Image (tube, rainbow, N blue to C red; front, side, top):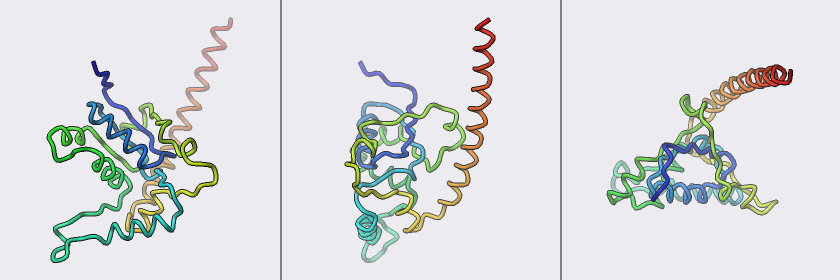
Length: 185
């Protein structure tokens, strides 16, 4: 019997892209609904220059006589992550299509998910998987270099969200302390 929770929200900050994608793909195929937020904070192992060259080769690939036929290369970090997961799922079968419909990816943390508990995947965390001193690249840097126009917008919205979250935390902390004092006596 499979244990399927309604929805798992994963905060992608500090995770390695490929390792997180493989775990997400496996869970999707098991029937789990997954939401991945803050995809722009994903990391790719290797120095920036090597990753830049890799992405240049990738973005250059197109149909010879009509580039409008594809392949289509998305610049947003969330869509890049979606594409990596899609490569790990048999997306041309009914089972794979159903699995991909259970995945949602976002840059930043949009409104319904900012109030929910966000999880991390220890098997994919950069600090646990990369040897100290090894170079890595932030996905937002590569994306903005190759045409993602919304890095400033996402950063501005994230700053607003963090201010609201801090205010909520302070209010909750004060009420908890007040509750403790009343329970002491």
